[in-house]
Amino acid sequence: MSKETSTKKPQREASTADQTRAALVHAALKLFGRQGFDGTSTREIAAEAKANIGSIAYHFGGKEGLRAAAADYIVDTIQMIAGQALGATQATAPSNPEAARAQLFAALERMVGFVVASPQAGEIVQFVLRELSHPTAALDRIYAGVFEPTHRRLCQIWEQATGEPAESEATKLTVFTMIGQVIYFRIGREAVLRRMGWREIGDKEAAKVVATATDNLRAMLAARDPAARKKGKS
Image (tube, rainbow, N blue to C red; front, side):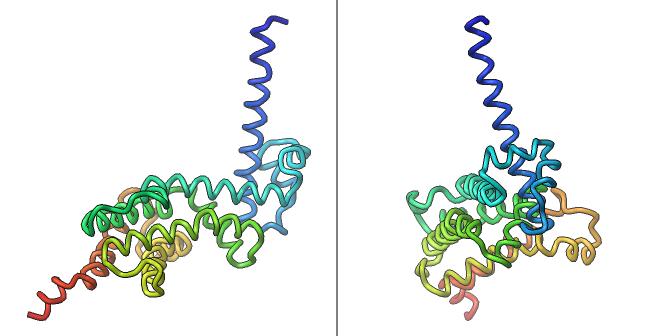
């Protein structure tokens, strides 16, 4: 065997192992979200991933380890998207209220683009909803990696935009409201489609959701603008 052949073989094996691992994580994410953890067998996961059932134990130590890996996948995915829109938690704060407000609008648009329009988000949201209904260690990983830092970062930007303290109860509730209006279009997707008479939520429909959500955010910010309130009273 040549040196070139012996070098390439481990790389191919590593690539195949990575592909199998990724396929199992995606299969688990889909099936755990759809059927629940207890309602999903390792045999079903292996079949969905087109993998040997023994590969679950090999890569993850078992079904519980696979659930943790699915949670980590969610954390990595949303951290990447949130990082693009919000910057790191320790990032320098926006230089002025106008810049902070612009960042809030950009984050809201990115949120709609992923949560509402991305097919990938459906499986993630289903998985998370299962965990929220019956919390396990997987939810702890998602909360620590996504919910808490993303919400905290949005609260910090809200403070820069409005002057309201980031860690105040009012700010936390306001940010939850801002996020919640977007999430509904995913968890209430079927109701939205029926009531709106839409066949799907594609780019055109998502743009309409963005327009409405940004109008709501604009109104929330205007209500906290002293100059706007003073003008409204005159």
